[in-house]
Image (tube, rainbow, N blue to C red; front, side, top):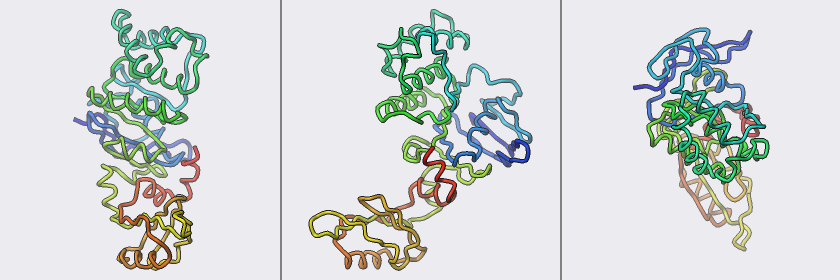
Length: 311
């Protein structure tokens, strides 16, 4: 069964075509990642799945049903624009969210306590929301999204602004939802998160689908045209970042400081590149690899990625 199905869906705002002829199927029980530059149509698509927005054309089925009504209690949604009742206490507000989702008071107390401990917020349960840090408040809103045990969870940029510790806590919580049988759709600008967490990855660019599949399927479309290189040239064990763009067959160099990624043209002999590198210094690392999701993203989005990666 597909948790979400979009068939030839389009949405415009005035003359701007935000989503253009999108067809997509999200299998039940998976983690599905949405990627794309800012303004590419990710949030519009998520809002149409939630029925906050209605498509101009096409059909959307969510949990097997097609409807024009607002999403039901089987769906949890964490929007990119966060919003909490700052004067309410954390436990009190979560109880309010549970009641909105028709969970009886007697049934929600233990679930609220479980989630507070899971998200490392037990000591803040009786504090007002306004006393929380941004990361804490974000985790509280996540609890409010999932407190009713929805079958489908939609998260718009859930990791944005979180420090590494809180991001790890949220990551474990999302994986726990999948283990419990929920389907999770989330958008992200963090390609590393998408690579490591998602069963399937969908990329939308200028309103159109440009990637859709597993990471292996996506990478297989691009072959193994990346050489990852660390080159010691200073004679003291340290690396100096030489300009390697003049190497025969090299199309693009991405300098990461301690190593470089070389994108080579089809048919380039990697061993010939290695021989040239050894003539310039001691090769500490040399790897022939498929492009990362980040590299594929940049190839597709080009200059538009600058805004996305600094969002």
